Image (cartoon, rainbow, N blue to C red; front, side, top):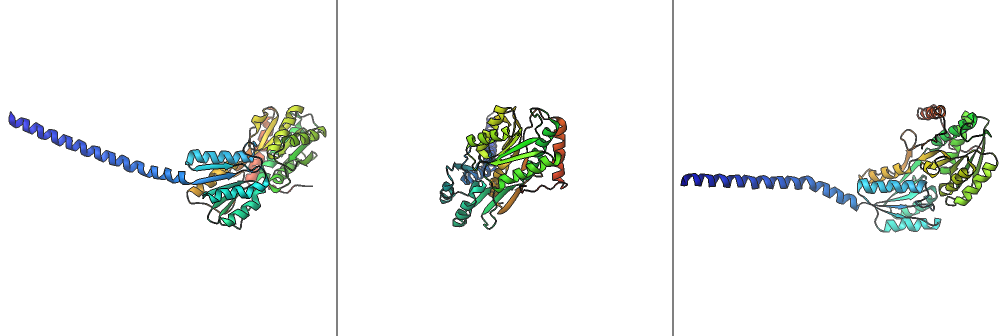
Length: 351
C-alpha cells in the first residue's frame, strides 16, 4: 500500500512539472507573437505627420477637408501621430510649415497650389524632412512629393452631363442652352477643371453657351453666391463651382433660384441634394493617405505623382435623381473613352 502511495506521488510530481513547462512555453510563445506587433505600433506612433491647410481651412467642404479626411484615415488605420495647423492668411504658410519641421515631423503636407513658394523655401531649409504638396509641381527637391490630378478629365465628364441636360431639356432645365462656371482664383488647378468642362459640354452640345467668372478667392461664400446669381440672371441653368469654400455660396444661389450647381473636389451632393447635379471629385484624401503610408513604409517618392480616371484619383460623385439613365450611360462611355485614350482632354481654358 505504501509503495502505491509513493508511485502516485511520483506521477503527480511529473504531471505538475509537465503542466508548468507547457504553461511556460505557452507564455513565451504568446510573448513572442505580440512583441513584434507592439514594436510596430510604437514605431508608427512615433511617425509624425503635420498638415497645413490653405486659407479655406478644414471646413471648406472641398480640398482642405478631403486632405484632412485622408490624414484622419491614416491616424486610424496606420496609427501614426497627426496634427493640423489651419492657415488664416497666405503669410502663415512659411511659419506654419516651419513650425512642424522644427518639431521633427517626418512628413509635412501642404494643401494647395498657393503654397508652392512656401514649400520650395521650407523644404530647402529642412532637407531631412519629407514634404507633400497638393496641386503644385515641385520637381527640384528630393524631399518633396507633388500630388497632381488630371481634373480636366472629370471636368469633361461633368461638362458633358451639363451639356446633355441642356440639350434634352430635362429636370429643372428650361432650355436656355446656357451653363456657367464660378472659379476661385485663376490658377492651373482651377482652370484645368474649367477647361475640361468647356470641352465636354461642347463635345455633346456644340451650340451651348458657357459663362465663366472668377471671384479671386476661395473662402468668401457671399462673393460666390453673388457671382452665381449674376450668371443665373444671364440664363445659366447649371453652374459649376470651382472655388473651394467660396463655392458654398454658388450652391446656395442654385437652391434659391431652383437651378443646378455642380460641386467640386468632394462629393457635395449632401449640401443641396435636389440642386447639386453631381460633383467633379478630386480624391485628395486618397493621395494624402497613400503618400503617408508609402513614407511610413520607407517608400517615399519625390517628384510628381499623378491621379486620374484610371487610378480613380478623380471621378464623378453622386448623380442627381433628375438625370436620365440615358445621359448617365453616355457620360460613363465618355469616361471609358478617356481611360482608353480615345479622348484626350486639354487642361487649357479656351478663350
